[in-house]
Amino acid sequence: MATILIIQGHPDPGGGHLCHALADAYAAGAQAAGHVVLRLDVARLDIPLLHSQHDFLHAPPLHALASARAALVEAEHVALFFPLWLGGMPAVLKGFLEQLLRPGFAFDYVNGGTRMLLQGRSARVVVTMGMPALVFRLWYLGAGLSALTRNILGFVGFSPVRATVLGGVEAAGEAKRERWLSRMDALGRAGR
Image 1 (cartoon, one colour):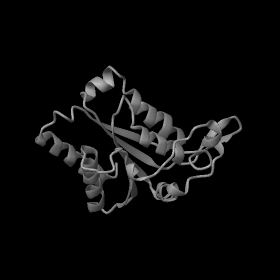
Image 2 (image 1 turned 45 degrees about the vertical axis):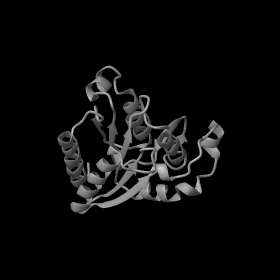
Image 3 (image 1 turned 90 degrees about the horizontal axis):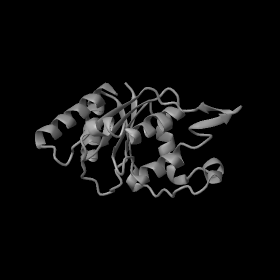
Image 4 (image 1 turned 90 degrees about the vertical axis):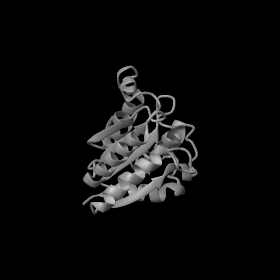
């Protein structure tokens, strides 16, 4: 059994959105299969934005992220949930990742290259959106998703990084939402 970190990236701390229900279904499936589940809700953290390269490279780690760093070190798999906003992840999630995945923790610069410090972990990214998923993938080429999966998670060592794209969420009926929740339960049970 694996230790799974579920990161809720929806920016509304009040909860009650589809992303929250999906993460809950994933967690329930993972726990039912015997996985250890750790949870982190980004909207409930007070994370300032980085404003310079110097801060990104040299500012001390935020005390507010100590438990997030510990959970990420412990995790073998990360499941990240967020809604697509303006073609990418919400700003609060991007700011969180910039603060968390900094040099010395997530990667190091070595001899003109980089060394990944979070290898040995896999990830599942679940993104919800109003547009049809096929339009996002074909017309927009999934740009906001690949920026996260390849340029952020892959850069620091996550592999494999799998994605689930759920489109047309506002128009989805109850039956479709139930299928999505069942799929998340199955993915959680499998630790994928």
